[in-house]
Length: 183
Image (cartoon, rainbow, N blue to C red; front, side, top):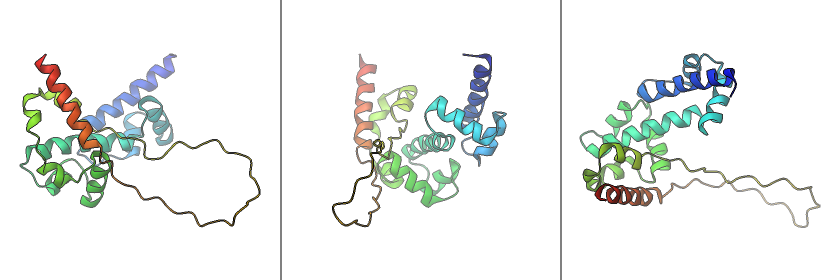
């Protein structure tokens, strides 16, 4: 790595650390770019190249991670959790939470989390960390256009469905963590 690349990496890490610490504050890409001493476009490109996701996606995953911990505690309502993690819109928070976790915040709060009681906090944090699966399939290489043999149909817009397998993957990770602790 060149000295310039190392300096860029340090600046991008500074912004990521800011997101980890101040996730509840209203942060936008411009504020994060200022913390990284970069322009917004350059910061977004560097962040994605370094961490494999956009700054906004990273921030939302940290907020959802914290929301999951607060909801497992069961002492706060979904609205209180939404505001505590820095989301201004309950609808947007619930939609993103459902997309990432695979169930609504209310269902997650009502779910049984007693399996995590015997797992140390540092492992539970890693096991329950939300992971975003790519929602769009990779594009195939374009082919040369051919003459249409059938009349064109109107394209249909696919609807997004929540990943219902996320909850079962989390449960299996909890079981693996419990077995690792017991061993």
